[in-house]
Amino acid sequence: MPEEIIVRIAGSCNAASVPIAAAIGVPLSIRAETAIPIGLSLWTVIALIIGGDGMAISEISMLAGIFKKKLVGALAAGIGLTAVIGGPVFTLVS
Image (cartoon, rainbow, N blue to C red):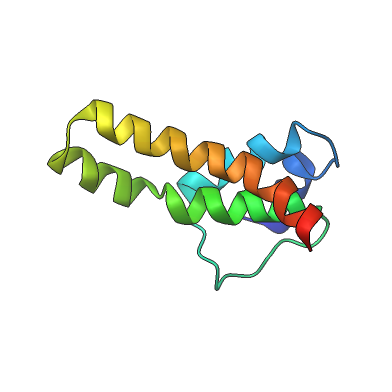
């Protein structure tokens, strides 16, 4: 996905950009080793990486075949919440 699209969707430095970035990261399966989009705030980038690394579609679908849907949903919700909270907290700590 081109960097310009991510920056256009989640580039504004507001509270909504963090959950949007976390949701964008899921289908992209972003890994920490990939290039980080320039133009996003630090907390948005952290949410993008946590969301993509923690809730990759391939991993969630694999877990859905092993565990009950309720557990997989709780895991996805926990990772999503971590992504949304982790970005601002990381920015405050650093």
